[in-house]
Image 1 (spheres, rainbow, N blue to C red):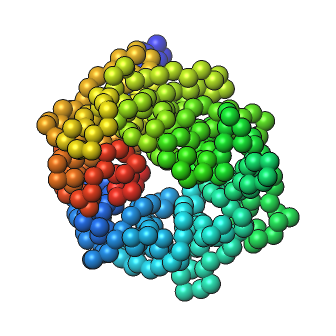
Image 2: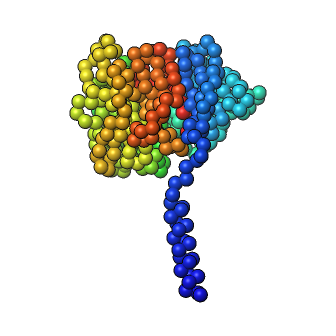
Image 3: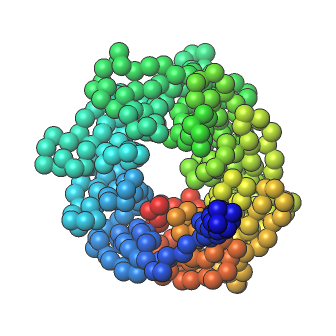
Length: 417
């Protein structure tokens, strides 16, 4: 009896282990849990699940950003893109934070919105709209990002022009409640001074690697030079190592860390036109050995990580610049596997259509992207990561202007995930 009962117990444990490895798919449709904010003819719209709703009427909306929990949406209003507004989904309430901002970013942990106004970094708790809701944090700021723990910021200064040339940009850490107290600001790193190898007068926002041990950012020279060339940099989180990875355009979504490893991918290449010399590079840290993932004769328009080894890119044939948009090759999506080195075309958009801004929706295991045609409006599609089961999700996104890369489309589309 004891032997039989023991055997039954082993069989039960074996069957249970098998059941626990079988993926459980929700009964509801996957699209029922998607939240996407988008601009249609310059107004703000939301689509939650299968329900679309127009939020503004007759406005000029850009730069859509979700709070960490999807309860709030921040965006810029006005053609100067400098009025900062927020919208609360639950109460369907919209109000202005400030009328003059150059950059803004949500806290990764709270309903606090940080923004930059003429070099002053400030924070607003959007839950306290009826109280004094803006607190100044630091002055002399060129750019910033929340630190991953949400208790403070990594900020950059703006370089100074001296008779001997430009000084180096300074990086600092500052707690969220610094209240302009210089004693609470700690120096982190000084970027190199102007030279033939490096030139930056400020930086982009900062991005942390998956384990938090590395920080990437773009070093930006003066405005005229920045149109053609910026430097992608990586610094260790302890400030003890600094590396320059390559030259690229100042597109914030053209450099991204893998969600599961310390691999950094970016679209490398000088020149302001995205039809030539734009190649996807991948570096793994702490080993600094970049590899190119773009075949000869092609250029990349944007990309998304699936996991630590899979990437989906928006890729077109390389060409010379033409003032006629119909003469510029349109991209399709490709799947890139870093382990097998296989690259497979996922979409075939058709004549005068292009597939842009691929984005992997992690919670759903779905791929999203924008397909644009000669009208310059876009449609948002969803599919499995191998390109199968394609579904039209949102129609007529955009404002009728021509966007030919993921950076342009990212200003008018934002998924919450």
